[in-house]
Length: 385
Image (cartoon, rainbow, N blue to C red; front, side, top):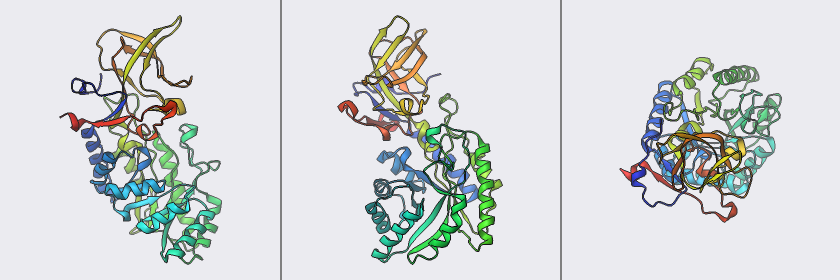
């Protein structure tokens, strides 16, 4: 079953472009809000997943916070209407200007990932006569059982402070004049569909809190990051992630202290299914052992298959003919510019419209102008109603 697309209204719109289903995005946001309201949890949207200004404004209108990993994202969050007191700023390499921008905006907190970073934040806060609120990103050494390039919670990863070091880092933070420790932060990876990884995270977080409390440390906030995956194989049938089960795991297992606030930073699960890369077929090339559908979109528009060997469901929106097997490729002068091999599609002809599904996260936002190509435009379902 193909998704519903207003191809008859697209006319001569230049491909490739991103098409967003606004109704699906709203339904997804309402599903998240229902579950977070149930437990009084706080959700910060991870802007790195998709920073389209219209997407950001819509998410901000639901009262969510923002999770940023650059100064540019902090600025975009404020401009889109996210309240500064719900903005968190993470990342292992925050530049001075980015820290200063966040201090001037009076964001909720910095998610600090090293002692070296903490010293710089304190210095810059002193210069501005401000108090910098910080959470410490803890590396819990939990295996998320996901792709190696999107695993972030192991001791060998560059992210976070290892469990063995966190106590001494907090003690040092308490000696700094312009630092206020407001919580602990965790993020173990991305595209996680096995709830056991989140259960392991809860157990590690409980053990850590117990240990640190014995040393006299308490935390008003616990931030469990994001990582919940989406179903890339069945976007027409399973287009909203299982938020109910996801949040229930944390509600059940986290030993929440009285008055403690629990935070999350979902990104992919928010926007992944609402976005689609729309392309046209340039050529059908018949090889000796392969049949190629060559699109006008390449990894300059959607890099995930080339970078992560990621799967995206591919649909021919123009054809109801019998299926044939194709390698679906782009025009970029790189052998890795392949969206899928041995893909069964309704028979493809030049000019057919092809949809690469579930591309709302890490699609448009990672587009590049390699080969001096144009960046893709974006359109929303409401534009064609």
